Length: 311
Length: 301
Image 1 (cartoon, each protein chain N blue to C red):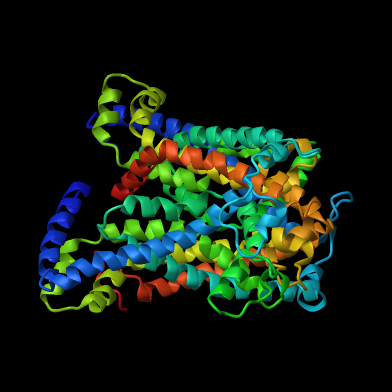
Image 2 (image 1 turned 180 degrees about the vertical axis):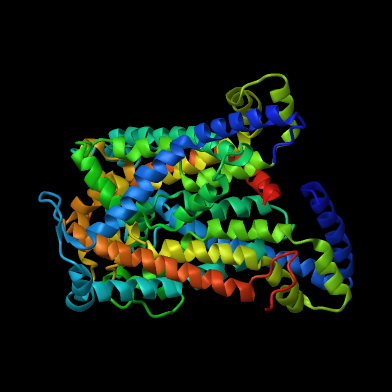
């Protein structure tokens, strides 16, 4: 609260003045919320019940778009499966990898700054560029990856040309960018008071026990943050999939992600009503999954100052 | 506990910790070495695609896919860079300029708007503020595509398809993530500062512009940098809004090039390297203030 100790009348005037200034300061964002959030969300919802090709005005068709999606659009289910496969592997692997990397980085070994920079560097590469580089490296006959696999005597696979291996290849590509979340984990690790770890060590806790019972619980808020971010971004994977597989999800629809399906429905077929329905479904999926994660957070996230992690 | 206390206790603690671990001398020498080996391996794994991109940019097409692997180009084809820059009907210099214009415009718009809005949310009271802020944060969950479909139609009716207006203008009205970030910074400034300025008769705008804004300069820099990098990477927006090739930013230009010339690998690699290089330079130029800014976020958090 504003801490003015002026007489009642003057305080009221000052408060009104601040209120007016406050509204003025957030005015651009209010406009944005109306123009680029509220209006589009409501319109998408409305369009999802219409047949709309941009040229002719929208025609109300009730639930037909949703019915088509679930019963008459095999690409819908294919893209849902692909996206789910991708998210279910990329998110946990990314989290575990980032946490492991952060633990490695969270030491006071010489040259740590250099390691940190090196691991953050891939984040700078534009997704289109990194995907192109990975396409070359994943080349089944003469690419770098298969050459290395052969050198160490491992079996080689077709990667982006093989429907079975295209998604794992995309997941490997996503893991290359885990430096960002590793740095967020690292910041979280640095917040953990050393005294707690030392106290646990004095009480005879080993390395694993200290990690399991001190570090990990204190890190759960950061894990929650990275988990939510990871899930949302994996639901939205688009650029990499489009560069690899085009709008048809080559090879054999194996890289046809949900966002690619929405994109082609909206901006290739100009079936805006159908695309709006797909977008609404994506919105609901994101909402439900984040709600479930936040609900479950009551059980597994430890908040400092609260009574504990168990209900 | 302030940040400094925390780091101090951290240092003190780890020294005693090290002494304790020193009980086994072997372990104390081996552990850092092991860490270096592990970290080195991870760092190499992360660097290889980067290195491969840069090195392939200087190779012949045949060398990129040669067996045994060629870890160094032979001969070095410097002319790949020039050829990529002057490839017929793919004006990469033009793409580069478009990217600078696009990312720069969004970055400027984001800093200006989000500083003002973040300040309003953090330091000025008005009815409905907290509700509005809660709404702001929750909009981050809305998938971009939900917004894109109607705004595409809107900008089409306004006759702005094929221009940068739909891509840059919205940034001048704010961005939920950066509003959130900057609000955190403004919250951390002492209330006495603005009170004193108010007593001296300074208007709200002057307090914001002359007193508060200079104090959050590191946060403004972080905002500018992140939004610049993210816009440089942006693909979906340009893909749906732009149609003329001469307007493409680098991401989209690369995509179009790849779609048309699937076998020109050395040029693709050279163009990819060119698309990345400006960000790497930017990163190294600003690394210090960048890390400073991140540390500051840590204090607020």
